Image (cartoon, rainbow, N blue to C red; front, side, top):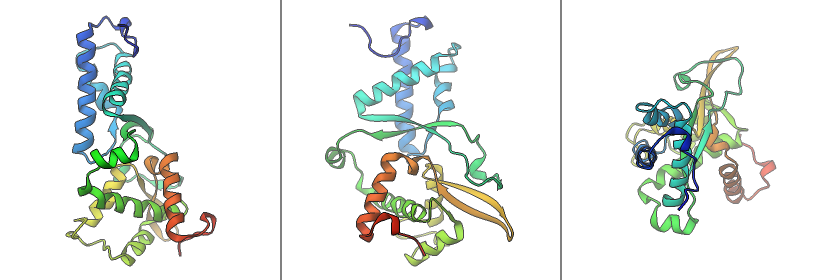
Length: 236
């Protein structure tokens, strides 16, 4: 039966070699995603799985594309490419979160299962508190216009009983680390900018929070909670 996936004939690989490379990439994506709590996987990491033993320049892209098809057909996951967004502020100072190139590509996996099936068989209720925390943070930044100062963000979090110095919150543990995790997972981007009163740390929405489907869900949830027209909702 003909293979409807990527054409590997140009690479002089056996079917077994191709299947092994694709399986290695699929396995790496699945394990790395769950070991790193959903942090994006750099394209270079996947490319190196292939290029460590094979020198064909176009082979890594072909293997990644075939792995994408396997993840969708077997596991119900969409391997989605993220393009690291550039900070919106021009007079930024490079922070530790920007030590990698601004345009570096990475991947995340998103379940394509119907919501009821996902909740029944996949969703981990032990991480529901982290999902809720993510929703709250992204909503605050969204309502602030997509960008908020660190001082302002913690002002709103303190109103909800979350303290920057709390390292043993009964649900979140280290609250500051939980916030930093959202930067690593690319829901937020953290930058330093120059201002008249010195350097200011700001958070703005990153790729995952700006995704069309995610952004629309956030707007719908906020609308339901505040029961107002979205255009009139503002943060103090």
